[in-house]
Image (cartoon, rainbow, N blue to C red):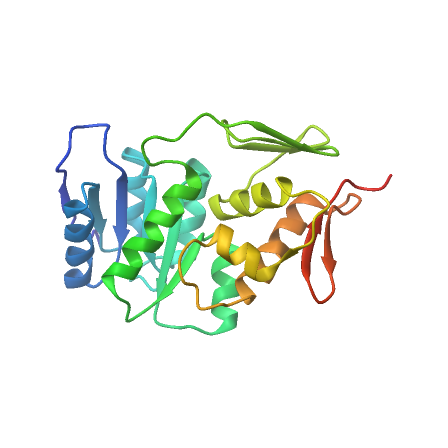
Length: 244
């Protein structure tokens, strides 16, 4: 089944953030699309996963609000297909479930954020803006610089990361977390410091999200190599060059 799609724009082409809302509740999908349009974004919505994938391939969005439960595909399946063609897209999952297992599943699938229903529209907008700031999509972003820690290299402007010359693909939030670690090498950073810097809204002090993202960063950076991310017991985490 193809979902009904609404598309509007209140700004000149190419100047607005492109957003895709994937939600099978028509009233909620319309409300979210209308809110983002009033914000000056180019927003459209899809009521099922297949339509979402088609729209995203035709007009790649910069941010996606993605319901986990859809009538055809799961949100996880949609996310996987979106990442295949647009790995840098910012994705916020919507779900009616808020267990730790659900959060783990969402982050493992590559989501950048996670919001449970019911939610306040204002909170969703703040979170989306936070994702875009981390991705440096909003206007006025300055030129980036390069960061180097041991054999780990980050090109902030190109948003590329390599270790020992091998490219490492990261989600928006993973990239920003690693950026913070690389800007503070050999310095123990607490979970609260990381939450304040990487998640620039009130995340309720949930340290689990830091632990989960550190876990997935380790899998991408350290698997099969000497570790660079270390746990400082009772404090937090530290990034330092690998010991040969």
